[in-house]
Length: 167
Ligand SMILES: [Zn+2]
Image 1 (cartoon, rainbow, N blue to C red):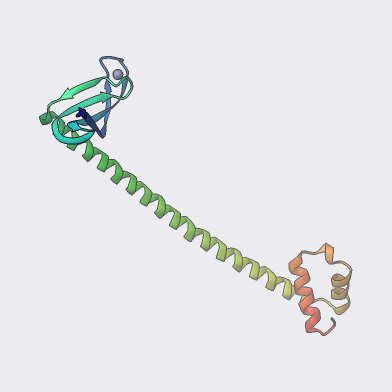
Image 2: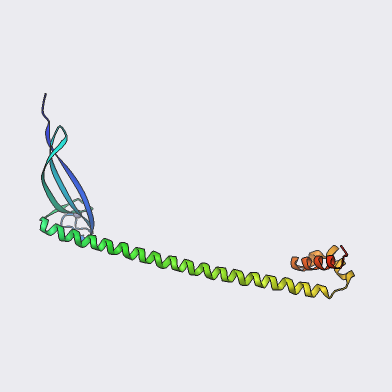
């Protein structure tokens, strides 16, 4: 039976680094900060770690720049801190939007209650208007001229006729 020896690389993409010009493809784009761990394998099982390589990769052409671990650690910390800051800013913006939505809703409710009050006032205006009309006029409006008047008026006429026991 043959013993199958080999190596395997486990690549961890850590953070996306700010834009930087690539010496190979010459594009200015985001770079990825990565660490690649190489393992010695036996029958495809990882046996031990051979070493870790730290590198910055161009996301366009995959050009890779090696970094010493002393360079890698502070870079990683710096970009992770920046990511956290961005997340924090996003959360703060969302909070502001939520606050605005709450304010808008409160205003909407206030407008709605003013509208309801107005509708109520209008109805009571119709009621006082029809109460001054004679029976025959109210009956004519109710039975024949409904279409000439707004529905609030007809409601007021109907209740007035009921009050006078005419319908
Ligand atoms: Zn490149």
